[in-house]
Figure (cartoon, rainbow, N blue to C red):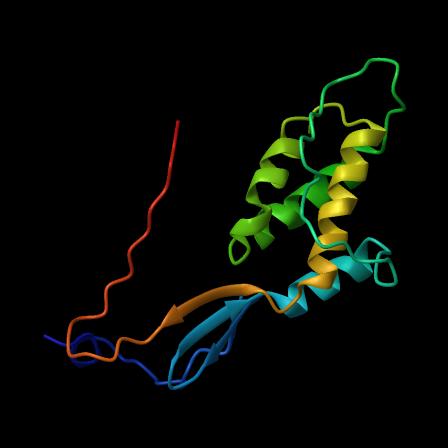
Length: 151
């Protein structure tokens, strides 16, 4: 039984934008990205004109809590981390760095904020990156498979 026979529905066409996620549908598949959301985030945190960087997190980065290090505005830090966490919906490449800085939400220091801003600078240079879901070319059912490595 089809849902439209049971419920009153309106076809609004192909999905283009939903909750900060943008969808570009082509004959080859669907590209999901958050370009607009990232640009709005950069403007919100006054990083619109910052220099971008080519890597999301510096190699061998080890963050720790240093009592003597300068405290930063916890609300600002939480806002930045929150927007970065939402950006992970289409940007798994930043997930490690975002998880790393999320550990310091209770009492963020200058080094933690610097890493958060570094990730934002990376996003600035890669605004069109996202997830691509290719269309199958054979007659098999489309199956979206996901894998993870959880310890």
